[in-house]
Length: 207
Image (cartoon, rainbow, N blue to C red; front, side):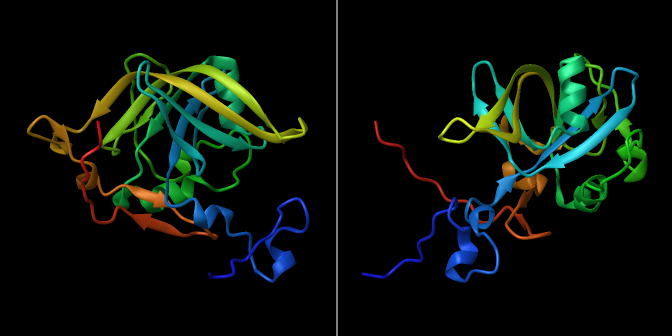
């Protein structure tokens, strides 16, 4: 039997066993990117990528992302109740990265990253025009995460119901969305590690 590395995050973490960095976000990888666009109450545009993001429910469709710290996206959603998720592709990777800059309040990340906005139909925040898929969302819940002991963290899980979906027709073949065709970019571990979608395989689900 292989003797595994073992550490307890609350007792010194990975550094306690000689690892240079905590491998947690490299192990839970790759992860889809939550590229979230919002509007402030005074109509200031905001666009930011979040590495803790996913789909959580089919009916109604609910997606969510975790904001570590109460950032502009969280504030805007809390006050307006709306946001848009935009798919990050390899063609948009540099723009996404530019939009992650720690810009001062009031800076428009669409302008900062040279991204063209496009109007939505059901919500007020703009979507990323060049993204092949965007989800228009209405806020459903915000949960402040706690430890097992009940201690509040500085992380908020923000969930929204998808009320409108934009898909580039070139992503559809035979009535089926072609996941790999969009060349989605996925978040890895470490500072600046990203992945492209790899090889696909299928299995028949039992039952």
